[in-house]
Amino acid sequence: MNKNEFAGFDKDEYVPIMKDESMALLSKFCAENKPKRILEIGTYIGFSASVMLSACDGNLVTLEKNADNAKLAQKNLSSFGDRAKVILTDAFDYIVRQDIEKFDLIFLDGPKGQYINYLPYLKNLLNDGGLLIADNVYFHGLVRQEGAVKHKLRTIVVNLRKFLKAITTDLDFETTIFDVGDGVSVSKKRGGH
Ligand SMILES: C[S@@+](CC[C@H](N)C(=O)[O-])C[C@H]1O[C@@H](n2cnc3c(N)ncnc32)[C@H](O)[C@@H]1O
Image (cartoon, rainbow, N blue to C red):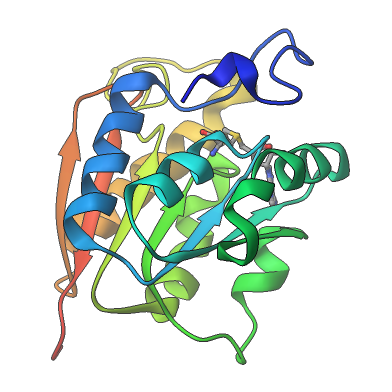
């Protein structure tokens, strides 16, 4: 699968698609865990969604708040038919809903400063034994770096630190943080807590 062949690949100067090595990890977890239902937060043009759909037989719901991106993703994912559903929405409005069937894998790749706020809702939307995978948890190395952080990035960095602390101390999760790409966390939800 070639990113350059995706509609809209060259539309932005900065292409916010997951790094290749992180994508390989995401693909591996999908292939090994065989999720039946996947939720993605942050579609962009649908590349990571297509990687997940190609690695397993499950269905995927992906949330995107930008209408142009959602439209391009719809086009790029059309070959997956009913297995892929792109929803144009602010992710928060969807994850707070009470009428949604749970998921076996949730891939979190939307607004980085919101991961900590999304966490309780995502935990609730995850089946026991399911995986919560989050990208960019090291955020260009700033999350692990000591010293001052530029004012405009401070909230993101502080909130990502809170997110990492939460997923590594919550007894309902068994978390591994992979030092690949921009940092990828993988948290398995334990049952019975
Ligand atoms: C890093 S990109 C996603 C990249 C994609 N997962 C991939 O690797 O191919 C993040 C996307 O999240 C979207 N986004 C940002 N805030 C959002 C929100 N509150 N709700 C839904 N989508 C959001 C952005 O418009 C952007 O397309």
